Amino acid sequence: MQLANTPITEHCFQHIPFFLKRDDQLHPHFSGNKARKFMVLLDGHYPLVQTLIGYGSPQANSLYSMAALAKLKGWKLEFYVDRIPTWLAEKPLGNYQAALDLGAHIIPVAESHLHPADYIKTVRKPNETCLFVPEGGRCQLAEYGVSKLGAEILAWVQSQPEQKFVVALPSGTGTTALFLHKFLSQYGIEVITCACVGGKEYLTAQFNLLGESSHPEILELENKHHFGKLYQQDYLIWQQLNQQTGVEFELLYDPMMWRCLLEWYPKNQDKQLIYIHQGGLLGNASMLPRYQRKYGA
Image 1 (spheres, one colour):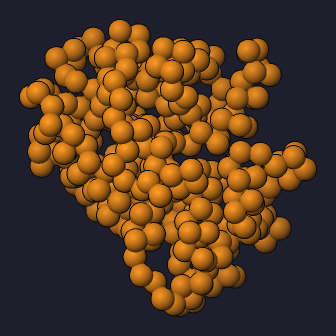
Image 2: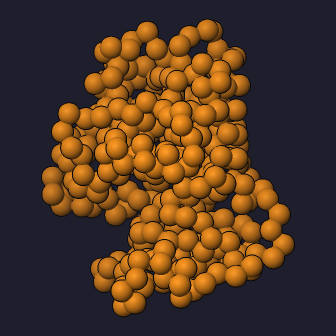
């Protein structure tokens, strides 16, 4: 079961040479940045825990990763959502279907008129047999696994000819980028990211909630980029990435980061880029048909 030391491969995209940390190859079920965030839960000893509890979107990467984690640990997963769209309930796919296949209990709470987090706190009321994980894994627990990722990157960098290495990855809550920055900045390795959910101010606020005053650099596009909205340029970037690298990327986060990097690189050609593939490919099962309906193949 491969849960560390993923390979680093060499590629070029739009004349940008880069190395790719293949965290999509961590494990058939437990992969990507969520696997790194939840690694402490996999490695740790929790004798009282019987139920893992989380919340978010019914198509969230975290849902699938938590379902895989619960399966590996022999726990039950309760994952609370606002609602499950009728079309998804009738024809499950992507992260939702995969989580169901792993035994997840996905519970809609819209009729309670409570946010899933409030529902868990006031109605579900987890006890000592439950382990609660905040949405997207934004918590101090994530530092354990992300630091291990940082150590793998550092060991590889130290085996290479001396260069100015920069690590790049997109951010939702920013947890992975923040703890990578905390670890790698000690060794002079820069981390850059972009705010896929909300803007720069939102992402900075997320960093501050985790109690860290030193943050990775946040790249921004010239125009506001709305999370989950379909952009033809994102779709084209994704297609070109797949074609030019021979690697499938995910459609929700990676295109925005690469659009930022295409603007960043001309002024930073003296730096060697390491891009972190964060998995999330099951999400393409629902995102790709949306793009194809709007823009064609």
